[in-house]
Structures are given as structure tokens and as C-alpha cells.
Amino acid sequence: MGDKFEIVIVGGGTAGWMCAAACAVKLDPARFRVRLVESEEIGTVGVGEATLPQMKDFNDFLGLDEAEFMKATQASFKLGIEFVNWGRAGDRYVHPFGTFGRPIGEADFFSYWIRARRAGTAAPLSDYCFPIVTALQNRFMLPNGDANDVRNAFAYAYQFDAFLYARYLRQWAEARGIERVEGRIVEVEQDGGTGDIAAVKLASGARIAGDLFVDCSGFRGLLMAQTLGVGIEDWSYWLPCDSAAAVPSARSADFHPYTRSTRRTAGWQWRIPLQHRTGNGYVYSSADISDDEAAATLLANLDGEAMAEPRVLRFKACKREKAWAHNCIAMGLASGFLEPLESTSIYLVQMAIMHMLTLLPSGPGIDPALPCELNRVMDVEYDRIRDFLILHYVANEPDAPLWERVTTMAVPDTLADKIDRFRHRGHVQAYRDGLFGPPSWQAVFVGQGIEPLAADRLADALPAATVEERLANLAAMIADAAAAVPSHADFIARYCPAPAP
Image (cartoon, rainbow, N blue to C red; front, top):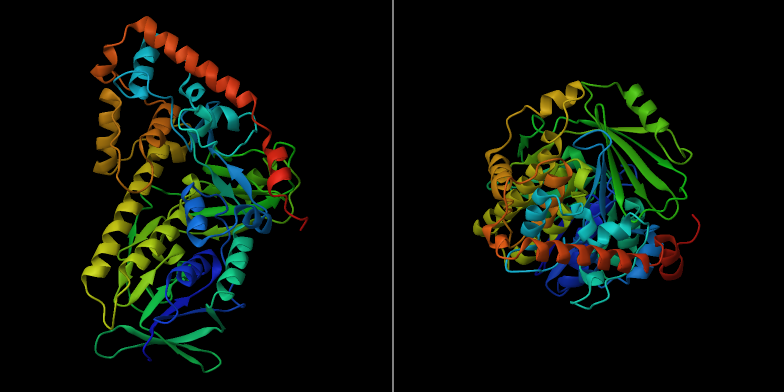
């Protein structure tokens, strides 16, 4: 090893090349050497094509040009996630990337809505959210930057081809000094004294040594699981779906600026519209439906012609017991798996990367405090997302065997406490960092039929007629603003049209 701190990323795909790109732009090449080892023989899992607004933050962090990135990845915009048949058959709601309402008194807006809702004078919660009203009309605009305008009260994400994104980042990272090593790893060498990973050996005979290794090898966890023996926390009791059938279909006339999740008998189906096609999949419990039945259900519920045969994937809801062990950090599927119900996979990669960059050792050796901190923050991220996903499962009609089981199961204490506090007074704890603030929880709670018994008492200060008038004016303002927004298809055609594949 020379004077430089050597980082070896094992595995490409979205996780590997996101990590490499971040290293390329933020690490001093005079002090760090970064190599990524991948093999063309090993495929990647490309199910996660929908993202969260933090994805834009990551691209901005890299300095990517938004329109160029979207053209290269066949991307569309995303204002939220629509949930169909969740809660009760026939119901639908949207988890938006934005807030509900705006201040109308001393209490928060949601408390006034609860009060008016219980009095029978409020419109549906979605009517007070600009990104929901806009998305359901298949319209899109960028935030206008005016803090006093309802057309600025939202964020947005992307829906893109994950394979194309990885390829785009590879070209970008290699142009900035990241070394790509082609080869299949046949052996992992460990230090006899510490147990740290010393090097990976390739089928060609090459030996790639490093100070820090990043495991982006997917479900198999070549370094973290197979070499270091770090186990997983199994969450399949709460999240029992263990399979997915995925298939692309031709782009439909309805070019939605949102992802759709439709609850089905044995799981749920995703729909992700891209510029050149639509991504579809059925996430299901193999105990409740066969692969053939799941594939048939998926194919029968496409809104465009299937472009391939369904591909079946297996997984288990889990979290790696440690994200950082010895001198190895796991990212992506090597660090755990949570189904893409809330499009969280790429977000978790992003968080691992950002914390890694913050906590990188400044010299030889790794202070134990550094892995402890990364493990702490990643545990918090995973646990919060786990609880948010479980909420979607427990708040449903028990209309099939799977749903009978999950709606009666005991939930984690952290989630039980959230449900209890929300039911009594509509309270949702705001986090300083991390995913899913109050508007997200409010959307899912209300959308799936859990409504508070009472509101914050501060909301009682305004006369009922005043609350009703202000709510009505706000809903009308949002409706008028949304009606003036261009269609999603037109906006894409002007801003970032991708070439035909």
C-alpha cells in the first residue's frame, strides 16, 4: 500500500457506481485512490427505478445536469406515489412529495383539517396539496421559487431506468479518475491478525488490495456476509412478501408524474412510467400465490403491451446487523432489503454513501467510533422505513389470507406508539434527519382509514366559520394553480426528451 488511502468498491450496478461517482467528486485524488471491481459476467438487479426527492439532492451533490441526466436515463418526473385498493378495495390516495395546506392560524394546518373533517366541512385532505392535485391531472412544473406561492410547496423525484443510470454514472466517474477493474472475484484475502479484508483476488490472478472495501455485490454479500459473516435481522414476519415478477411494457397514453402501487390478493403491483416504456412488477408472498399465477396476474393488469417475459426475483425483508464491520461497508442489497413500496432502495444507498464520506478515516487504521456512528444512523434509517412499510400492511381490510395475517400481527413498539398517538390527537413526530416527515405519515394514515379522534386544542381558537372559509379558499387556490400547469408529457418533451432506444 502506498501513501494514498485505497478504497475498493466490489460490484457495480446502481449502488457501486453511485458510490464511485461520489468519491470521484468529493475525495482528493492526491490522498485517495478509488477502484471499482465488477464483472460483465455477473448481472445486476434493476428493479428500483422509482426514487425519492433526495435523489435530486444526490445528483446536485455530484453536479449533474438535470436535463442531460434525464435524457440519458429515459427519466420522467415524480410528484408522489398513488396507492390503489390500499385500506379498502376501491379506495385510492397519494403519498405526496410536498406539504398539506399552509398556515391558517396558530396550530398546524393538519389540526385545522381534522377539526373541520370531524365537523363535516372539510374537503378530502388531498384537495389541499398542490402536488397531489397536479399529479392526478398528469401535469408537472418545477417549483417556482416563491415561498408564498402554493406552486412552490413541493419537491419532486425521478422515475428512471436504473441500468441506464448506472451506465451514465460509470462514464461520468471514469472520466473523473475512478479506476474500473474488470474481473470476477474468486477469493477474498483477510488479515490473519485483525480479520480485516486485505485484498480481493480475481480469476485473472490479479490481486486488488485496499484500506477500505465497499460491498456492493448485491444479495450475496460477498464481503460482508460470505467473508466477514455478518448476519441479518429477518423482518419477514412483518413484511412477508418474498418474491417479485417484473416486466416492462410499452408506454401508455397516460404519462403519469407518479408511481402507482395497487394492492392485490397476495401482495401489490407497481407501475413506473419512463419515457421509453413502463416498468411493472408484482411483489408477492410465495406462500399465497405461485410464480405462474403471479406472472399471469401481472400480465393481465398492464396498460401497454408486454415487452418481455416476466422475470422472477427472490428476496427477504431484512437489515444487515452491521452496515460497517471491520474495514468493510455494505451498500445496496448487500446491506439489506426493503421492498420498493415507498421507493426507498436508492435513498438508502445515498445515505450510506454520504455518511461514509463524512466518516472516512483520516489516516491508517479505523477508529471504532467511526463504524459505530455509521451503524447507528443506518439502523435508524432502516428501522423508520420498516415501520412506515408495515403501516401500509396492517391498515387494510382482511380480504385475503395474506391480509388476514398481516392485519392482526403484532407490530414493532415504535410503530404501535406512532399509531396510538396519531389516533388520539393526530400527532406525528418530526425528525431532524431522515425520511418520512409528518406529511408522509399523515397521507398514509388518512389514506388507509386511520383518522384522529381529536385535533390539537390550539385549532379550537379560530371560529368554525373562519376555518371553513380558509380551507375552501385554499382548495380553490390550489385547484386554479394546478389547472394552469402544463402536462407532464409536454413538459418532458420541451425540457428533457430522451432519444428513442
